[in-house]
Length: 215
Image 1 (cartoon, rainbow, N blue to C red):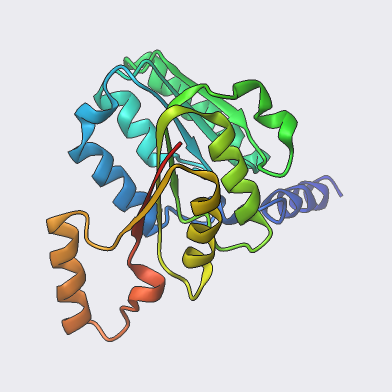
Image 2: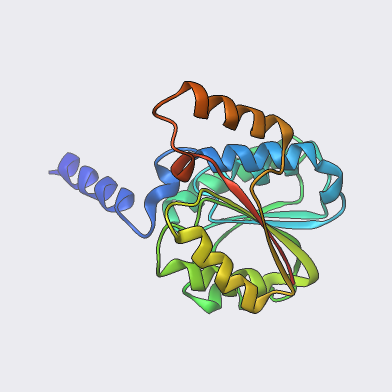
């Protein structure tokens, strides 16, 4: 019975709130990490939060460990992901990433982020536009926690109309909301090659675009 109970507990964990971050590291997260690495100087001595980073927050961890931002907050809305991020943060602090912290941030619960209003120079976020109900909340969170003049970098594939719908919501709230389809020569080259050589490659699902938001 104990074994069965443990299995039921695990099942509850993996089917809990927005579990996509426990599934894998999504391509948009890898692309975002690469983009941040290329533009490291942009984040120097700046405060950065990664929203919806799943169980790795790959880009946020990379920034914390390769540069010295003033602080990096790793976050997700799934408790199981946050528990894993806590372990990662402990390891980061042991190896020089002293300014890393972790928080559970559900975008539909204002108490999770209202105390961080106007706190961050940068928000980074990858492939978090899929759920219809989540997009308006994500816009609100980003707008709330960014400093005036702060910048958000949101990477996501089009996935039908989901990216365009998010961009439309952002255009109402932010002073500038810009979509970039080509933002990195290396990625553009790989994108073009895949379209020619891989029939399974679907840009609508696989190629992350970049939305840059300025508060």
